[in-house]
Amino acid sequence: MLSNYLPVLIFLIVGGGIGAVMIIAGFVLAPHKPDSEKTSPYECGFEAFEDSRMKFDVRYYLVAILFILFDLEIAFLFPWAVVLDKIGYFGFWAMVIFLGILVVGFIYEWKKGALEWE
Amino acid sequence: MTGVQFLFYAFAAMMVFCALMVITVRNPVRSALFLVLTFVSCSAIWLLMEAEFLAITLVLVYVGAVMVLFLFVVMMLDININRLKEGFVKYLPVGIGVAGLFGGMLTWLLYNVEAADLKTKMRTMYPPSAKPADYSNTEELGEVLYTVYVYPFEIAAVILLVAIVAAIALTFRRRTTTKYQNPDQQVSVKRDDRLRVVKMDSEEKK
Image (cartoon, rainbow over all chains, first blue to last red):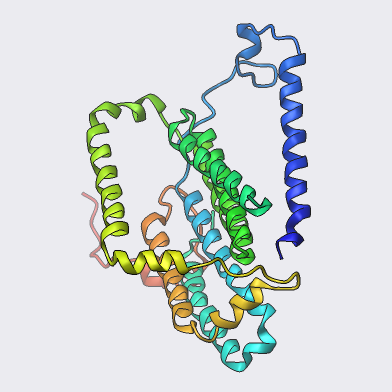
């Protein structure tokens, strides 16, 4: 089975190799004459207003967490879809209950207004 | 040493190196990127154990979703790195103590608890034989996950539900600064909510 993944390994090695060669060649071959103007951050023609790091809305975190939770739910669907013809109605209803429990959570967040950004 | 063994040691070494870099690199963005690389090497090791579904899920969920969101947060967050580094020396003895405790417990567990049993197990346990090319780990997993392990599977749904409710309860705040109209309230408003007729005697002009 592992031999199926040999192309992936070759792809990884070639991709990593090309990336490394690019960076190393740029580092070795290119002239290095840094000065304070070159190394300072710039913002398209004018002085930078502020630090790029700032406090941001906690609702972003909420959206991210909800996304990951439903991402995990999808991950459970893949093996189920592959073996649906073997596990029969028992497996089918097991997944229906699983999805039903998560739909409760979905209705909760919808009704609560957590999906709205305003 | 076979090719698979070589690959295992290569990825394991990469994983340990990246895990060390996660906690030693100064820049938090680089630290998060090294954590991505740790997950990738971990998924490669799982793939070598022929657990292909788990390996791909690790890349899909952790590298594709969790770490990208994490990276955004780290990039945007207002972290004062110097403040975080403060107190390193002060907490070092406590850290070493906790690490030593856990290391000691693990070592003790490995050598003392049912030592004979464990040693015979280690000697008699061989890696499963290599699977044929058409072997599907996903299929194998699905056949037991939704039938034999259906109860833990439903518990997973409940845990996800609890996580949804907890995330909303912890971080969801209804905005008080934004002004918006609620049509429900507008329609259902009664005359008495807005209008008050005051009865009073007429007054004379003095």
